[in-house]
Length: 257
Image (tube, rainbow, N blue to C red; front, side, top):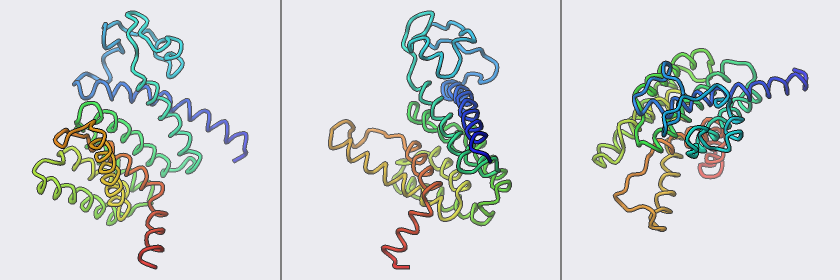
């Protein structure tokens, strides 16, 4: 692909990603509240004012409105801007690495799904079953289309990743939520063996480091809940794109293979 044409597609996909991010914001806000994602028109969550089309242009409307509702002046959460920008950057970057391939579609689907999970769990401490079901169906279909994770690898990754969290939940008597276990099945299915379990390990590692940090600063107590879903998301993303390098580094330096 010529350089000029490649830049054209990168910019185009960035703006497409912004639009996808705008939709993801709707899902993030409405899904945990039981509101319709497709039927209801967008409105201010504070005053209820229906938003005009020019208030819904991704990124640009946020700055044009100076980050406030046009009707009531209440600040708009910067999460809306962040999600749109992340979706745009992720879409463009993945296309740059994978091109117009099924692998690109697979990882784009996974990243966008995990973005929704991240922000919902961070705010509400839940991972909706509907997202898990969509993830499992998407994993089966896109693994088959992409062909980079075989059926056996996907099955082992799913069982080991979710099974480990299930054991932790049983031993800790509720220290891990059911949503986390189901999300682990999705990530294990997408990444397969051994990247799925590696992503879970990295998630547990980052969660443990943050928990110690928050305890030392007395920002959290020992019994205060910390959503684990965002850490599964972070671990999965790292394993998906750097997992093979991490495994190779570990085997070379510690196992001497």
